[in-house]
Length: 456
Image (cartoon, rainbow, N blue to C red; front, top):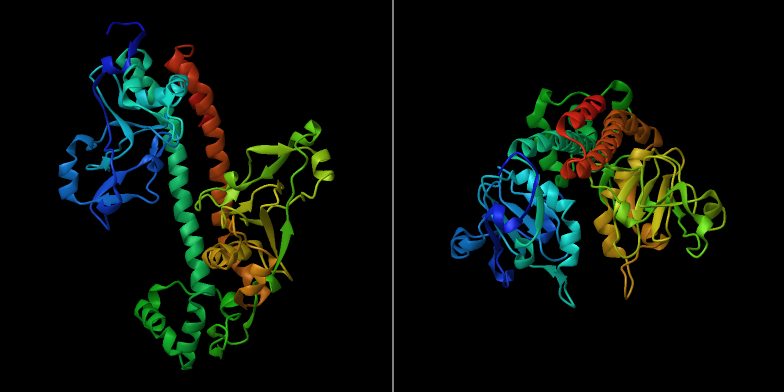
């Protein structure tokens, strides 16, 4: 294409621009088979596998026009029009609906194109959204999208710079998934499955309740493979179970109480939006849109901020670091740990432990009861959980010293998760600064690489 940057149409640099399957899919989904991507599975530059659907190989062959292959660029048509990602190598076979599919020609790098569509082409997408009820971006408009295209070698260099940032962000995300899973597994082992109590009961020759026999057999099978607990922690677990009418078998000495007996609930508030001085300060103000992914655990920045004046003149309260937040109205059950002091709106509760109950124990106690809280919520328009909802849920209360022991064991995991989140946020800000400059030619690759070297 020559040595200079050129403005071209997408249809001129793509070998094909087509559209995903259009039609009813409800009866075609199966438990396993060919992955079937929908709008909700496409995020900026990544494939989101949450609620991923599957279709049979037979149906996949029937709708082969919308088959996907690694390297295809997919653009969301409805819901979040213009959001774009590249089909990764691990999706060797897939299909889709309601996506524009772009197969790149020899003069364009697929990842460069995805970066470009997600940023520089957003104005084109917004200008070509159609539909009175459900707005969408159609394939005809996609074909006429203008792309400022540098030489291929420059595209590869831009992708190398931006990709290094995205890869580090993704590495942090993957590490967080592992660390959070380790922490959650430990909580379940100690406080849900009662493994240490089972182990001590087996060692003492005490009876194991029938409902826990399977867990006990699994414990025997592990034998010496399981890392023994430190003596100071092990001695805090009893060596037998007692039966309760409310919860069945629980560790001896662990009283069954209502959830509100081990935690305090803190309400939120919203400063008056009509008073400008209450907003755009330096105090984070949490709402459900700020809830992190399960693996990221912490929230440390928010979409909106309030001022000290706004805090003082509303029912909002400053939540200390380590507080658990749970959304309580509308979208119920989104949880987060406060990573720095912040406030929240009235659709959430802050949750703190009573009588020395440790922060990370509170977090998992709430997180692992989300479905129960949701089931016990009420409301004719919006599902809502109230203080009475917490009173209605029963839980075994262990010694507070054991919650502190759990907190201390997983504290290094959670500290690393928070550090990863903060680093990823810094890297994302750098990427978002470099991105428009690189895609416009204002900043060339050598200059961006120099900034990248400083960041790492």
